[in-house]
Length: 254
Image (tube, rainbow, N blue to C red; front, side, top):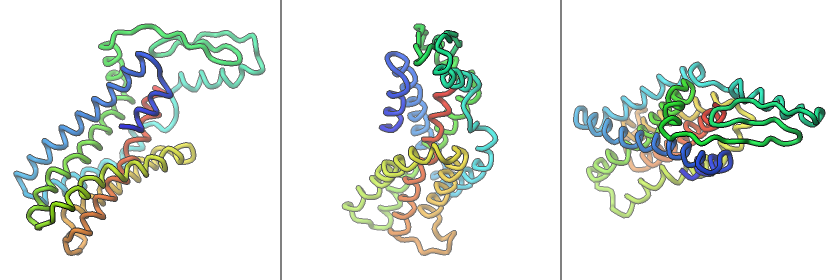
């Protein structure tokens, strides 16, 4: 939440920031609710084993398709604007308006002046949904947040069956939210050097590994214990930023 808020606040201002930020936060909220619902249903059907196997398998299956459905470069309009900006220093008399979604971007030397139009919030939502790239990014964000949120609810019942002391409960539920803070810094610094496809695939792959360690750890022929589960939760939290943050620049350039 904090990372997305910071990125959007630097990129947008005023009403546009509130619209974009609320849409992305709404997407995260939908993912959290769906993850809890689907995870509970799978737990009722197949017990503790089934949700982790289904979600980890699904995450591994989605990973190869990320490179095909998510672009790695800025949109055509963004490329044109950046080209005009680079040439503005040599041609001080350039003054050409480039139509952009949500307003008019005027390419003037040496800086850009953005003239924004007031838009109906419902039209903004419809425009985002109709954009195939943004829709794919939001769907991936929903999937990632759904998979990240189902674990704590199911894990609490498993910990009670293992007679884990209540003092350790806080550690189990804090790790998925502590590690993304550290990994978010790494992701932001490496996004300029590494293609977003690689970061997304790394995040999804290690999230699936984390699920398998938390749930069916005997799949790896490892005896189920608290330390294996803590390792899985740590991997899950650390890799979450790799699976979500690289989607934000794509959404902002569309």
